[in-house]
Image 1 (tube, one colour):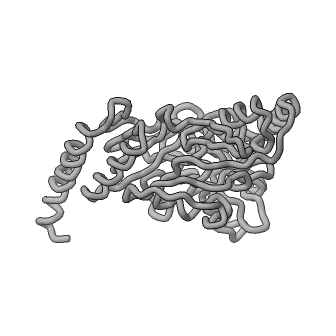
Image 2 (cartoon, helix red, strand yellow):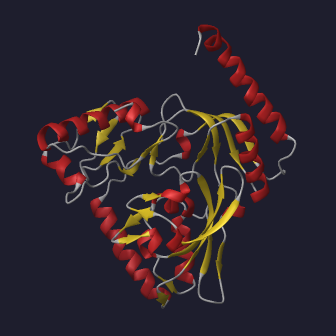
Image 3 (cartoon, helix red, strand yellow):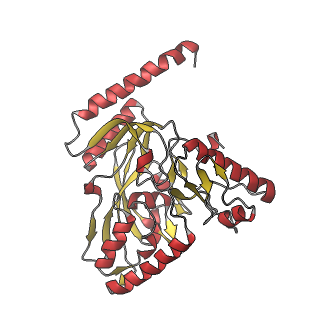
Length: 325
């Protein structure tokens, strides 16, 4: 890019944003939210991070489509934010359109006559488990303690207590960045550890889930209580983003970090949890920069001592880890 083009680029970008906002503001339904420079840190479980250039909560599929189509037309980057439980937001924020399916219209839980359940992408996993328990539907208990939404769990194939999100999925309804809707059977999707390829360039609208069986609500509740007790004993209660690193093949990231005596290691108010070494917790006033610096330090120590490159499991929202590590 020439020097003159670099000087002109901020004006071009401002023009694209102005065009986008002018196109969508008058067309969105009254139930949708659209704001500029909204802080994202409070919307995450780690409680750190700067603002979104533009933030939107569409109330309908048509509003979501409008936002996606106009963003594509204006050449704007789009990011999807669930309940913010598996990501770190940089201090400078996100230079793009951040979309969240936080409106109640995306939080439906609908048992079907054939035994399946429709779960909207914005439904909290905790609520999914609670509603399934009341309905006497077994098989979702492992999701109860994951502080995310159905959409985020689909994108990351969230797992806990030996279970994985796609263990209970039959089909996923999604919308591409071009605003096109599709329905995919589980067998048509490319899913593996903490990853669903089809949801990298699309947003999940919801999924049809298959319970494992019917059971008495009290029996389901007892299993949830067992899992809750295990989590309380093994995971920190301070703000965190869950496990920071993926487990390398044949090893445990938490065990590797613990063996190097890194529990309690700090950068600012970001700390390796004394309870679980694969968690970084916010001790009160941590910044995104603190967390990134601590991730670098942990990776360097493990690489030096063990010869293993730990790969982050959490997302660096709006950026790529390879650019900062």
